Image (tube, rainbow over all chains, first blue to last red; front, side, top):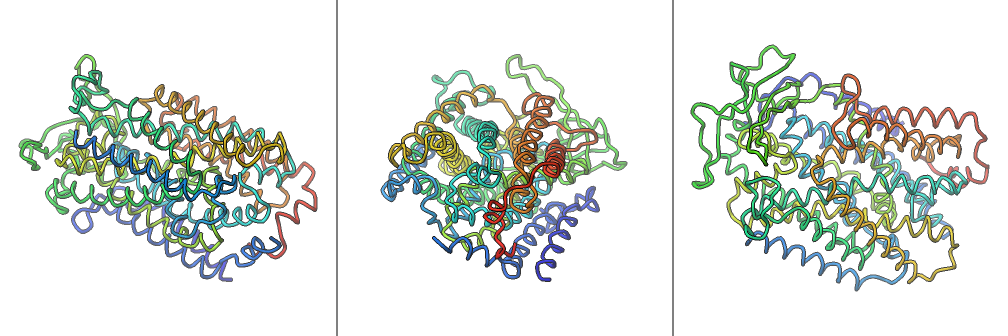
Length: 71
Length: 569
């Protein structure tokens, strides 16, 4: 279930990456950052958070044991 | 001259690092190729990140943003944050586990075992070399393009034939490429993968810090963070593209152009209201005509450029970052990991590191559209901005060293990887594991690395005017086209040897077809703006599935080896 949730978040992020709604918007955030760039910078932070969640809820423990055993 | 001394000092430091890592070298081939699986989380993050960020990331992203604007970030950086991290998690850890369990050092060893086929190795070897070489070329070309502008005027009597008239006396690209190649060769030669990991870590830290320092200085020169946003080129009410500012180098300040200086005109756009828009700050395509000076005749020649990014191109670029799943040099870095846990930091921090490096570069590229001539070669934009806006030669030297650091942190892994696959997948594979001693194996790898460095240098001199970003995209496209093979090998039991071989051939043929259509390395889109990587990937995936379904499945023994029932993934 937790793995499925991670996959759903992954697909959601993929969809959010296609931000066509801001394609023609050149407004500046904080006076220097174009909104299209600010959005994608925030997207990068969201990717890091998803990585953290994947490690917490979907870490392949058995695969790690598999690699270490019978050496 | 001072700038050059600082750069030379940095290169000397790297050679010293090579000597240091050589002292830690354990003398075995396993240590030379995969650092005896001893690399921890931080070194793994730095070496993986440093390897994936090359001239493409600093020089290429700034140049592309100068051409197309801020869409460059979403096009490559943010999607890479998502896709790369997923690949490290889903493919990197799994390959590390099989590598550690079964003693694989190279990708080809894994494929040979997984598909019970020798021939797949002989097929893949030349393809991997063919695809890594453009990646190496962009490093050497990018280094040459960076150093020449920042050293302009240093040796006016010695270097009299510059790439552009304003760079007279600058260190020419052939010399920079030669020095960079020799420095990288020295520490890879001495320290192997441990040396590359140390050097990558050191260089990644250097280029990240220097990138932020450069960004700060450029912001200050553009009148502070709030004014920098006003600097990019603007479209006026007559559809002319104008620069509202210029940077007075003598006084060291940004001055307003009154009236604004026209540098081009809009030729085509679907957008109805362009007045006062800064086309580099949005992504809607605008075709513009600019003029650039012919370096030989001095005559102004018109050229067209599409600013912005077509939406279909943006979406299909998703296929480009899949390439990391098939990079042979990244495979080798994954195998250096001490444990699977070493990957955790990389999975989380990689998207953040991309952001730290790419956001400033993309902004600088967009800002550059407002102060640099539009005809400047895109790979020279970053160094031109440093040269124009940052006056201090020591600082310029340090910042340029940062750019070189990014370039060399990829070159080293790629050189090492080619030496590793040649030695293990061709020489040892043919002769058997007991014919050569460990010392002889390392010697063979080192000899092949020397040959590859020489070959790459020669090719880089032939392709010295290539666009770094576009050439990199071609290299990534080829690896993306091979991605279905690695993914299916790990996750689809039914994948067969015949399916994999047919898929590799299909990927190669479609890639070669589009590469030829592009004029061997130029920007090329299919139909409404689809990147060729998407089509190469689709063809490769379809062929893999179809052929696998009609051929004999792998043996039970192989399936038990690569699909252990215990694994949760």
